[in-house]
Amino acid sequence: MLFLIGYGKTNQAIADKFSPCYIFDDNFKEVSKDSKGNTLLPSNQLKNYLEKYPNAQIITSPGIPPQNPMIKLSQPISEYDFFAPTMPFSVWISGTNGKTTTTQMLTHLLQNKGALSGGNIGTPLANLNPKAPLWILETSSFTIHYTNIAKPNLYLLLPITQDHISWHGDYESYIADKLKPLLSMKDKEIAIIPQSLQSHPFCQKTLAKLFFYSNSQSLAKQFFLDLNKIAFKEPFLLDAILALSATQILFNEVDYDLLNSFKIGAHKIEEFFDSQNRLWVDDSKGTNLDATMEAIKRYQNQTLHLILGGDDKGADLTPLFALMEKCQITLYAIGSNTQKIALLAKNHHIPCFPCHTLEIAVQEIHKHHTQQSIAMLSPAAASLDQFSSYKERGDKFKVYVQSL
Image (cartoon, rainbow, N blue to C red; front, side, top):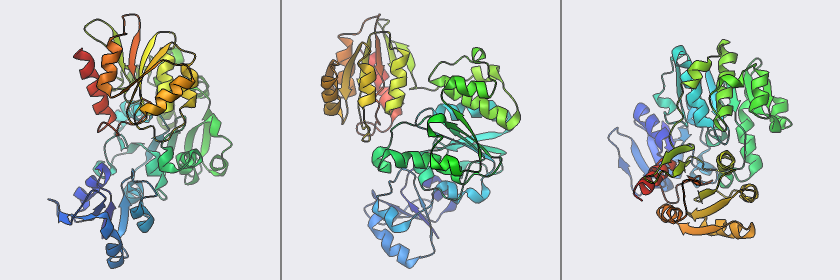
């Protein structure tokens, strides 16, 4: 008997493949069935069904936080653990920013080896071929939190900064979940880890061989990579170096030309011009502090109109404002933390327009933007307070700009 906690994309794929299942979700208000014969139940029914089926296997959608009553009641496993018995050789990629780009780059480099990508990147494990020679999995801290059986054969960890604090409870727990795979890795397996985490107990306990890096240059030096042959600039340079390091570890290959043919996806420091030939930048995927700081650094010597705000998940934004104090920036605050941003801006003497919505922010920037300045959406926050996803936020940003 299979119980699924939450009906997100991950569990929908499992339900389609392993129906009939019992699916419990806070959004279900009454008992019903879907077209596959799965039973959909309100979350308050879980206790009764656990008593009725005490040996049921329980899988949670990764985004459901540990404090949710269904989690406390059931102690579920992750999709990674569910598929652990059939998981092929796997590379897991995690970190605060750059997971998607690094996963896409590495998949691009290893497609001729039969590599498939999935996980947080969009393809649930239920839809990946277990007979593929290699899985490349973008892996969130949420998934790792619930994973206790599955492990990577190669683990690439990008730098970690404060993110998802309200979900994990505190920054230390977030770091612990990011490093948790090290505890399951075996001798001769490899992990590439930020230097700042070298003293963490999990790094001391692991059997895996660890490579530590402090920046793109230090990592490139360890794997004898020529930075002059890589076309990408920061923040994508580190993603590229990690991908090349992985191909060198796995196959002793470094293909600069193939790497440089990779195209960065939408909503990541994506530049475009309006009808007045003014530069706008869609960095809607900048959903946390570090991503936005990297985007600002790219334009820090220019006049910048920055749209900031959304659901910041309890993050401390002080380091971001300390950076912006040194730049020529005007803020346009949107989303649920508009007042928080406005207050921080006042305390740091940064001009700020409390706009509340993205459309109003674009209209306000329109009054001040010139061909010599930069206008950028890099919110340092999640989008779900006002949008269905960062993609919708970025798409609407472009629509609002093009309609000026």
